[in-house]
Length: 341
Ligand code: ASP
Image 1 (cartoon, helix red, strand yellow):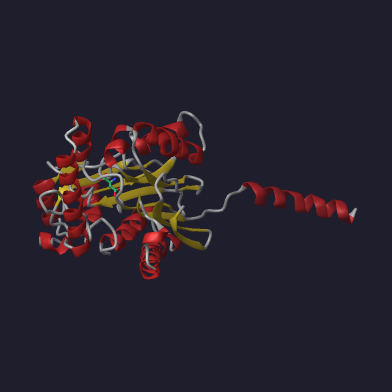
Image 2 (cartoon, protein in one colour):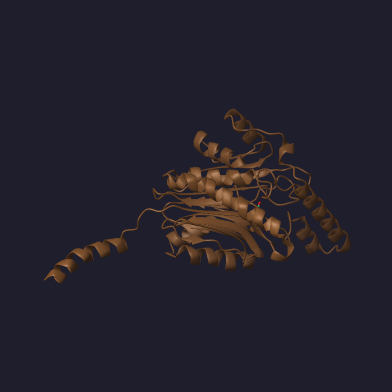
């Protein structure tokens, strides 16, 4: 009899513990995908990247664990990486063909499907904060160039001289790429080769964009991405990062995604929204949808890169088809940062 009573009391409790999912927060970040090889990295550089990723995670986690919202967390994490010259976003952004730093960024709120982005800006210290201001303080979604800069100044965001974004290593990167390109052009006049040379950047380079996605304790998702784009880009080229649905997307019914890689391919594949659609309409789990896009569709077109994602249940995906991707996450009290495959 005592055993029976015990079982009666115990079972509902057990059943409840198994089905009710307690609220949790998750934060995932990336610092870009690309040809990141252990053989070409010093232990010091490796340690610096891990420390930088941890600092960005800490900034976002402080907000999430205190019940803050996903939007604030992704913005905070991205700002830390924009301010760090190790990454191709904010200070440390890559150079355009004519020696400028033109920055793109986007943010999206999965709860309301509100979004904001800026493209081709040269004087806004933290483009991700400008993207958020576009979302929250304007009737628009995307502002570009001078207009975006005027808007940011009006909203009292921090404005800097274009020279603030300069770093010697990125400048050298541009010179190297220009030299390689002119060599390729003079050595081979085959039309296809020339077309490839005119692409912004090239396969052998690290992308270095930064991004963050989060699930907060209230069940809301958000995504943010910020980048200097691709080295040697021309003609006001804009990549996937500031294009909602391509490089950045969040929807509380599915997932939040931030991409890094050869932007032209991510735009053509409408990468982030495609994954969300595969989940919503095709009932696919996040990892299957993300793997299908990154490991099949992207290489089929000839593109490369990776992404980070978190779904509404806190599942994470971080697929990439390059040698490495700077990445990290905080989940269930565990902090993890990784670089290589
Ligand atoms: N996706 C970015 C772009 O094409 C580059 C990157 O990920 O670093 O602008």
